[in-house]
Structure formats: structure tokens, C-alpha cells
Length: 611
Image 1 (cartoon, one colour):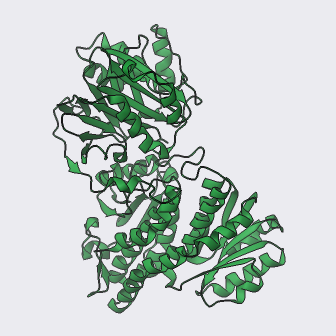
Image 2: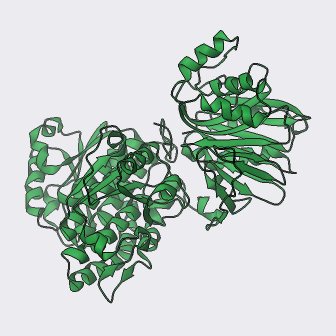
């Protein structure tokens, strides 16, 4: 979960790579470093902490200028955050510098072998092994690129690497396996990064390296070879978003901005994908014919974290509309448990970044068993998008905040459209389909009306910000929303919170309730309302601090609630698009009132690209 950037061209490289790192700092950072070729000599600078700490440690510009540089922010996996463990890592002679995103699984035996050959290690990282391996083979191989390939043939694990060599001062070498790398093409200059947001200010022309492709970058030239040493012509694409997408604008934090963008992002997710004439949805990227849909016997939805919660909601929708059995899986478990994939099973992997390591591994595991796997992701050109058999982009726009908000509601929107598409082939009439579609079109305005209550929700946050524990309750399709609300509070406020199906509360969790505990409950007008109302009476009788979310016009919960948040009414299967909004705002305001770093919560990274 580290970040890689690089520059080669005619300009001074160091300010460019430092600026690029700052655009990726939201993804998580405990140390930062850079390597630059200055007067044909390799210079290394690195510091624990934030990028600003690295900046402060740099010498005068005339002492560290050059037109070639690589840089890195680290999120520790092997070795504690420290200057010596920060990247770049170097070989024994300080002539080879590498920055790495990924994990080397066999680094311990490799390190032992290299020590026996006389190599001296200074860090606790797995990454340093790669630098020494390249050094080892540099003496026996004809070129540095061949030394890189031979060295990496000994490595087990994942990597995205940018490499500088003092003996080749006018080149950057980049190679990947299971970890994303993007090359940006400028005017006699090239950029490298693991996220396009780092380089879009400089160029919108990019290409994505594939596994085992080695790219040699010069200012006016690049060359790519695959694992068979054959030259490869990349597929260059144009990034279709503006730099303003990664600026906070008038908002205090990216997370708040992204919460308030949801009327637009939900609209973007369904725009152009509905057919009112037939009461149906259009998801052309799935490449599924009516005959294909009629043969589906089971669906697996696979994801991690917030994407897993979206999948749970998708299960309710698909089973209701299409009557197809749906199995929801954690990607981290799916990849290891030898899943049973029967004929006519469709698998959907859900990931905001499209680079989540566990989700990508689950996709590959399912494909190895002969399954067709479809991606639901936000990032065009991401690994899941490229490797899946089809899929749908959620079109949420760049999401910077580590705690996902607008991507979640956009994922739910796509799953709702998928449910209609499948249902129209099975169970739903055109009249029913049209009713659902028209209500979906009203959702952005209803989200807007909830956002207008933000100051009221901030007042509620003030009353619970000093709590040590919280409980979230929901039933039916709002149970996964309770899980998501609890996750958001945990992620950014560091308050322990758990979500439960409300009826399960009395099977254990009710023992936790006392007068100090906030209980946030979703009790909307649906067939389960009377049931959850009874559950909330049980909570009230234990003197919990009850905060309820219900529909406008329902005042009967005021008698048992400390606070009530009122929402517009909608159809049952669309409720999560509304009920999650106040929970996102509540978590945000609690964290902000506590003075915490909302966009960069401790120990978390935006895109989990390592296992």
C-alpha cells in the first residue's frame, strides 16, 4: 500500500515527484523518500513521517537538482516506520535505488542467501532484497534490464517497481507483477505512478503496464518488453477527468466533499443506463445476452470492507427482483477456501480502486476454475477492469478520502440496475421495472434534502463524540447499512462500534447496553418496521442513548429517542441510498469534532494493494 512516482525529462525532477507524492498522501503514509540523479551521481533522501518532513530535510535546490528522480511514500508492512526502512532501498554500493509497492513473500530465504554471498543489509524491509539481487546479477548479465529480470525471477510475491541505476543515469526502469504502475506521456518527458491522480496535472495521456512488462523510460523515448523479452506496443488512453476532481474546493476535508457529491455521483452511476420504454436497465459492459441471463443459477458477490457491505445489499436486491440465489464473500477468504463454483454461476468482484489485492486474487482464482468474472469498479484501466470478463464502471469520480462514501452509494446504484436487468428476464414486469427506475431517478434529489440536515447531524455528533462504544442496528436491507455505519465510525473516529441485525441484539449484544452507549438505529417504513420498533423499545428500556433514523411523518419514535433524523420515503430496495447518508455525516462530524485527520485515518490506506 505504498505509493510510487517518478519523472524523467528536461525539468528539475525533485519538485515534480514531491508534488506527485502529495497528491497520493491520502492513500496512507508513514515515511517518504526520493532518489535523484545529480551530476551523474545517485542521491538518496528519506524521512519517517509525512512528506512535509521529507521536504524539510532536503538540501538547497542547487545541491539536489536533476532531471531524473523516483520517490515513494511507505505504509509499513515489513519493518517499523523509520528512516532506514523508508524507500528508496539501495544495494551495497549505493548505485541502485528502488521504490516498491507490494510484498516479497520469500524475502527471508533470499536475504539469507545474499548475506552468505557477502551482501550487507541495513533495513528490516523485504524490499531491500530486490536491490541486492539486482546488484548480484548486474555483474553476470549483459544489461541492467536483464539483471532486473533475472533478479525478479527469484522473487515470489507482488511488486510495482521503479529503479534508478547510477551507471545508467538517463533512464528509469519500471516493472510490475500484481501491483499497478501507470506511465504518463508528456512533451519529451515521462512520468510514472501507481495512481493516475499523481500525474494528471502534467499529462492525461497514459498507459498501464501489464504483469511482467519491463519499461525503460527516457525523456524522449520508452521501450516495453514482456516476460519473453519481446517488444510490446502499449495501449495509450486519455484520462477523462479534470484536476479539480482532486482538489478540496470549499470543503474542509475530501471526505465531506465526497459525501456532498453523492447526488451527482449516484446520478452519474445510472445516467444512460436506463430504458424507460421497457422498464429495464442497460449494462452493456457485462456483455450478457438474454439467453445468458436466463441460464444463471447462482451469483457470487465478492468484495472487501465497504465493497463487501455493498455486496450484502446487492444480495437483497437481486434475490428479491430476480429470485437468483446470491452468495456474498469476503475476497480475502474466497481466494483461499477453494470455493465451489458450479456451472452457470456468475461472479462479480466489487472494488472501488480495481486494485484491491484480495479482490484481484479472488478474480483470478475464480477464472482459474473456469468461471466468468465481472468487475464493478471505479477506476478506468484498473487491474480488475482489465482482467475481468466484463463489468461496469460506477463513474463516481475520484475518491480521495480513505473512508469510502460516494463509491459505496454508486456501487449500490449499479447493483440496483443489475437487479432490474436480471429481474426483467425473470420476475419483474415492465410496469414494475419502470416504477423502480423512476424512483431511482428521484434519489439524487432526496439525497440532497438529507444533506441539508448536516448541521443538525453535526449537533448530534457533538453529543456522542466522547463515547467509547456505539451500536448500530438495522433489519432487512438496512442491516448492511448498519454495518457500514459502524465501519465508518471506527475508521475515522477510532470509537469502537459494531453493527447488528436488530433482532440478534437480544442474543448477546444487549448485554453491552447501558446509559452511556449511543445506539444508532435505522427504522424506516417497510414491512419490518413493527419488528424493529419492538427491538428499539427493548433498547430504550435499558436506558441507551437512542438515535433513530426514520421517514418523514413518523413521529412515534420521538418518545423513545434522544434524537430522530427524518428521511424522505422511498422504495424498500432503494432505502440504503438514503439511510447511509446520515451515518456518513455522523461519522465525519464525530471525527472532525475530535480534531482527527479525517482523510488519513491512522493505520489505513485508500487502496489495499498488498495482502
